[in-house]
Image 1 (tube, rainbow, N blue to C red):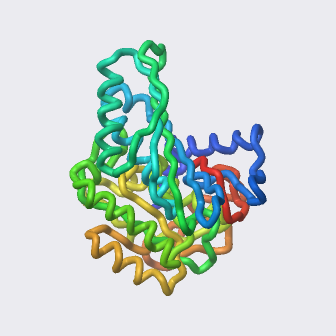
Image 2 (cartoon, rainbow, N blue to C red):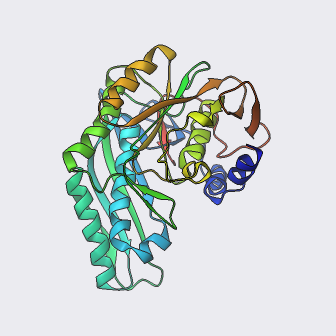
Amino acid sequence: MRELIQSLQSSARIIQKRDIRDIWNYFPKHCRMEGSDILLGDDAAAIRYKDDYLLLAAEGVYQPLLKSDPYLAGRTSVLANVNDIYAMGGRPIAIIDVLFSRDPKNAGEVLRGIRDNAVRYNVPVVGGHISQNAECPSLSVFILGKAKKLLTSFSAQAGDKLVFISNLKGKFISGFNFWDSSSMLEGVEATRQLEAISEIAEDGVADTAKDVSMAGVIGSILMLLESSGKGAELDISNMPRPFEIPLNEWLLTFPSFGFILSLRPDKTLIVKEKFNRLDLACESIGTVTTEKKVYFTDGGSDKELFWDFNERPLTGLNETSSTQVGNG
């Protein structure tokens, strides 16, 4: 277990999330908008609008992926943004993209990927910006969504069960730590899986969630716990994963469809049954604690310290609010 902990602690996928701490040198953690408190750090920005919340999110695509597989980069840019909206308990409304490319062929493949996944998730692309003579190719995609009730990263409570939801049917794309569990699904099926996240928010079953990002399940758990000002004991022996991927790789993999929920214990069975009916893995992998430390266990009484937020902040977020602006 010690070897696993050391490899995860030194992973670039987790360390890169520490760059978020630099934001606070330029922007305050809190701001005010139309009488609502807004706090940076969630998967999407949540802005109160009448009886609902408007959600704003953005994703910059990993440049090596953009270079090696522009079509997949386009698809992934939509997927990541759609996940961010559903992780907040919302549903997507529209997408815009900003693409800098070196040649029309590359740009065409990126745009084809964006189009195909936008159609798949029934999200219109309504505008953006493109340049085809850029020295440094890049892709950023932005999404607007709406939620009736929010899921946030700031509401985990001591005693909650941490639940990991994922689709273990897929294929591993080597070199990018990317588990593709979505491209083989029909649009109706892919959307139905995501709709279940919004439904548990609207039904009052859950109030705390985090999309599993490029930092993998372990990095996303750290961000959720830090935002809530909590710690956890994680039973890594109970982590659902595809049999062909070693645990140390899976914990840092972007799983296409992956969400962490912090649930009151009496809601856990309800959520498990809901996602199991959709043929998705849904397992309790730990318990939230008041101590701002994260421990690994193997199902027994022994535990080892993985992360101490008191000594090693990740993003620098540990305050609570009801409405957030995203940088996840």
